[in-house]
Length: 264
Length: 222
Image (cartoon, rainbow over all chains, first blue to last red; front, side, top):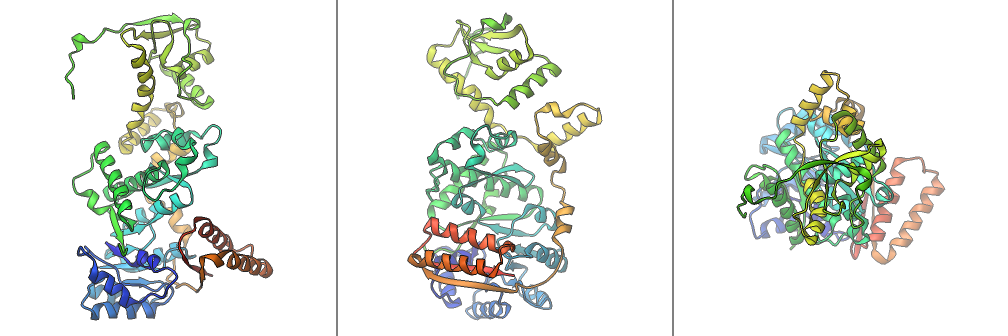
């Protein structure tokens, strides 16, 4: 699954264009399973134009219904695709209310929530799929996202482990197969970007477990964003961990990895 | 995996000994909180001392330091032990670690767990003694049910994003940009808005992480 999000990140600070995105898609060494159109946050018209451009280039992207788009256009998007992306949800106020509103309109049709994977809403609406890069941000901001089951996480920062940690924290570590004492060392909190350190391993293991659990219990696919080879290794290490420690059906792991576009 | 024959294994015998004779292992790296000791003590009161303390031939504890501490807290004079005289020094050293670490590798099947807890609750059993916090019990009970309160509190609309601020700058300019934004926010008296925290947080993060040569920041504005 290729999303334009990481493409945007890759091109950070420079002008980006739908032409470059199309070139990128066409130049991928492996044919993408599916890929999204290039949305423009807060600009429905530009998002529409980008979709048209990609279609004209004989590409077959998943259209994106971005916040601000006329609801009348929703059905038109479903005429050209079985699945549409819901965009404009990241870092914006009112995204949860928008999810409630748009999912009522979408009904039982397939929707992918771009950058929105709050389990409370997933349990309510059962979207076809979601993606998120929370594990990356957790590492970047030196926070542990420890999966507790039922789609819920406990967030832990270094200061939370000073002194005697709370019981639920210790339990959450154990649930992920770690001892909380592993985070006592300063180096454990360093985001190497290569998956070497406990903060990276714990966050990725938690999010992979979340993804497997959501798919198994709710049916929604959670795509975890990755953008380079070390991140592929990180995610697969944890898939193998859960394969060993949990009865994961063969093939489930294929659903975990969302490849955000990268130039590598 | 190597086949084992139980006939080759040393037989173990549970005996009761005076707690004063037991010696905590000075090299035990496992730590136990006061809360955990308290919970184990309650468990012993409810269920009995069902898991013996493992000791060596010199009465030094190999496994069961938390149970030992809980027994002392309860004022028990005698505790059940198993003497592991077949382990050599290195094996003892390793077993102290392995006994703690191996137990971490199991996880709950929450559906079965919830079923069991609900049965105990229905029988008026005090489920607090199970070792879960109230928050954990609530999580287990709620399970995969949709959180209707959360959904309702979010509201419902099809509104678009009202606007956005895009800031493009070079990495070496970020401190200047950050200061300008902070000053502008303060001068405008906008501190009460949620967006300001978000804005500041992300600028701070970006600065500290030295993310890329060129910074591009998009902030939703409302």
